[in-house]
Image (cartoon, rainbow, N blue to C red; front, side, top):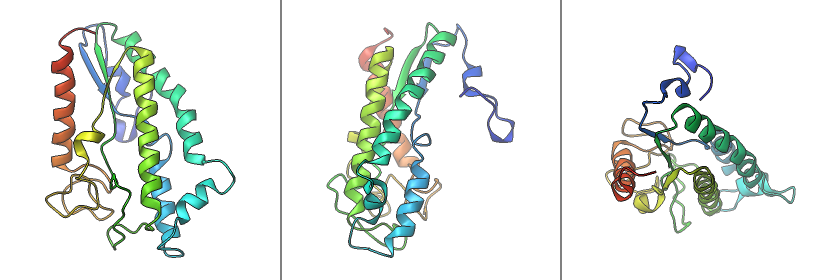
Amino acid sequence: MTAPQADGVPAQLDALDRGTDLVTVTIGGNDIGFSTVLGTCVQLMSGNPGGTPCQTHYTGTGTDRITDAIAETGPKVAQVLRGIHRRAPHARVVVVGYPDLFPDDGVGCTSRSVPLAAGDFAWLRDKEKELNAMLARQARHSGARYVNTYTATVGHDLCKPTGERWIETFAPETPAAPVHPNAAGERAMATAVEGTLAHHGRHH
């Protein structure tokens, strides 16, 4: 947000000024190291495919390290939202939550393209819900809108077959990063954002 990214892409906050009227932002997943968590879950699956090896790894010390990381990320999200408001004081700011990555009923689909232990799906689902809840809280506290894209994408998680799946597996079949929305998922998220903007009109 505040510094140039790879390949010389300028800091995202540099795009804002007093003439900006709308800002949408989705952040938090990288801050809690979600890709690293998923990589760890994949590595641990083979040792206990029917159990909860990843949950055990992250909670074995008596505290849930991902829950802790989400709590620690909250102030960073608040700081970004303050930075947006400061640079674009007249803009509507919309925090867009994460779509439903894993089966909402917690029942997994361990396969070569989704190499996760059966018992870890429900825990991963819960961590994503915690992340979205934190984003909703930070949006509320900063005067931004929160868009729930999770509910709109339930039933289209990475366990669903091609065509019904809006989140790609670890081996994407359509253009998308692993465990990220494909074009259909992005459309569903955009529709949720448009619905929020239409509902709230042009008022803050």
